Image (cartoon, rainbow, N blue to C red; front, side, top):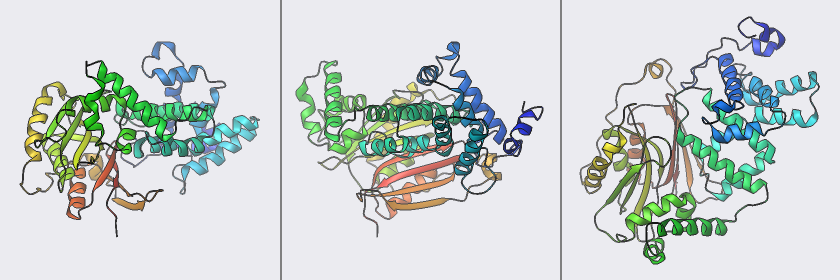
Length: 427
């Protein structure tokens, strides 16, 4: 229908985006191609022979009543691009008019309009906020409002991201979305966990995992006494157990502890660093990963009660042929040496920019604002992705003696977004 112009004649608003390029560094398709790719992905969720690709999305899609509504939302979610203004809001108005012309019920109209207007919401929360924070989950639950809308938004978000570019989707993003979905679903179905209950549940599961390694319950006590509530909320039980197994007998060690393993999900490595906190530590770690040829996907930065840094990174090799298992010992040895180095921080090495970045550069956007609870500030950065970008940001923060609490790094093709939470009061 699109190839022969029929779709654009039937839906004039669709006809206006046929062949329209998207100069945002992460969409590789024109607007109309992207819309049709999202519809294709939604259809793939209904096919039993493809259920292994996205098990949760396929399961939810096949149990969703009137799933054709998702196809309607897909047609309109980006249809207002290029008009100026918020394309989500403008597209939702078009979707509402479509629903009225075609006699959709009020309930069905409301769902389609919601999906179009908020089609970016779940991705933004999962990739820029802490999905393990009960307050984040509560706020997202209030936005979604019902289990049916949550299921529809999750399915749609997976299809949308997958229809953007083959480079954008990875197992890390899949896990963030699934974690947010499950936590929100539990809240919406009347099983919310209060902060203390969530903490107790994680600790109990981590203790159970430790017992599988023949470790008694008491081995955790010395380390856990140095960890506050924030640590337990940010880390899942598997991470807590892994770190406890490696640190319970080295709580006051004078030598840096660096442990790496294959990431529990998807590609890459998970790297744990435990060392006495020091000035510019985060920048030094980022500098090492840049020189070693790794991209940082996520960083969890924590300071214990006894003034040790307990940081966890997810890193991925810059090449497609990264042999992660072979590089674990190298990282553990070299990074431990770097952590005791007194050498000044050098400038980022830089590197070759991609052709898309050279032709369509993004003007950097930096935004600093206090978080809702006033506990820290959130620094949001959007820029063209390039080698050494995060290290350059970390060096600047170190120069002004600004501490990080956590950092979310999101790469969308050649566009990079970073959202570090700053623990130092800014004046």
